[in-house]
Image 1 (spheres, rainbow, N blue to C red):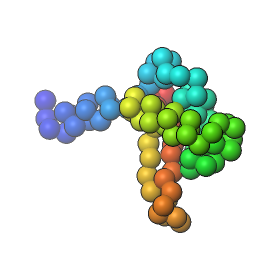
Image 2: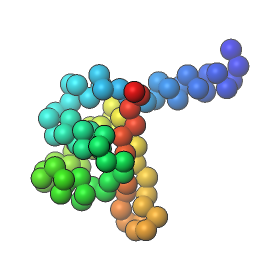
Image 3: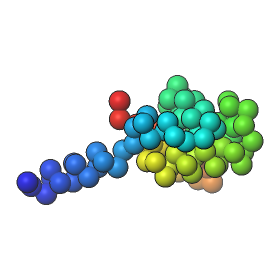
Image 4: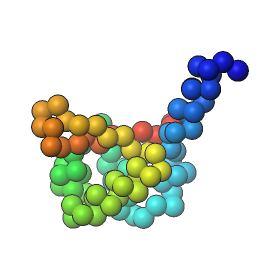
Length: 90
């Protein structure tokens, strides 16, 4: 097994699946579904779309991050904000 094969297998294992989301709280499931239909969103956009409080959205995103099903990056237009997208194996 080459080093590149080991790297690819490791990166595939880092991605979550819908099975990982199944046991999460309802708020995390809702946030995952909203991110499934919208490519990239900020925390505020998620809160507006789901009608959940900002604190609940943060908790849901943290739980999704623990399961490796959400990807986050800094916004180029406003570095104070993070952009979230779903990172699930289909």
